Length: 50
Length: 510
Image (cartoon, each protein chain N blue to C red):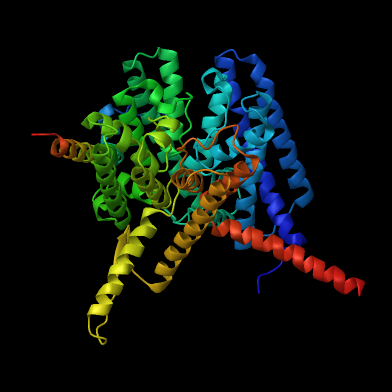
């Protein structure tokens, strides 16, 4: 049986949706945390004396 | 009329239980590999004994109850409810033999907390626990809560599709991702393994960054990734994630917990290229909205009460506990006594409510679930709209969850029933805890933590807590994991079986 050489580019191309999906989920969770930290920062800023 | 469980029914349940035991026997032998790597030869017999006993029990059940009859919903529900209890009893054996807990009941508490993905711990001296025993605790959470023991064992060990579908429903994962349940289980397994590996690498890098040696960072990273994705909350350290005192470690924990709390259906759709679904889905919208709203409230409370004064402290303590609670993970960066004594009542109540709301349906998280909360909120606004419009106006609601669906009375009733079940158990659990002399906020916090399979503690859960309370929390963890109804069906079926058996005996004697 002959094996066909598969390049990294081909693997990436084949699983593009999967990789992009995983990245999307990680980015989304990070954005949520970024929003939360922004809220914390703004509240701390509002509380601190001018 | 509810049918009584007869001999044939018990045979069907017993046969499937035997199959599941065979899968568990394999599962209980996995920590032997860790024991060999770390040279913990003395712990190997504990796992081999447990695995052997489980295998013998499984095959005895299969031998005596061998049946080809298909499984119905009532069998599936009883099977699921029984499996969680019996699997926990078997899984507690290595913990008890290794003296990881101070009593046999504690070992059962620990293993049930593991299987249900709760994370409340009564283990003794976790920091010096054998690696293999610690790995066993984490593996229980990953398989029990991260993947779901019933479906995996039934599909791996080859039951019919319909049997697996029914068991799938009983295990509170009723939404099918793909037409075939075997394929669904494989998809869930694939998604879980992918996130487990990515999480482990991220945790290991963060551990190295915090100054851990390579061996410890890999072991801790792998274990935390298992419990983080499974939204379980067990840790290899007695201080949980506080031990590491590292922002990156905590960030990885939060990111993994949020991903773990997302619906498997959503993972599948997003990984197939439909990324827009995340923002359109009613469930994720509700989950993200409640998460941000509760974060704002908790930050405001902690800042205004001067518990923490800097942005970093509020984020790493307040928001971290909230994310951990809302995703029902149970990772902690605040010691329990500090939470109980330093934090004001309001943040404790907010976290308790967040725990009750929980993550997304059909995910690894517990609680009422964001989908049901979203549906109830939508139904509430629909009723307000209906009241404002003329009587002749036709008001129809719709919601988007992977596909557009009408907001029917049946959907609303289903969501309301589960929410009511959780609220009733929450009230009952809180009252029982208060009956043991604990204050109201701590009782609410600990009850919702056990019921919604979270694992955060206000200090009540410990090896020295009253036995009655340990049993109460064990029941809450079990009922919470199976979404109340499954357990109620089992109890009703058993009660009816006993009652009708008694009637029959009375008739016979007269």
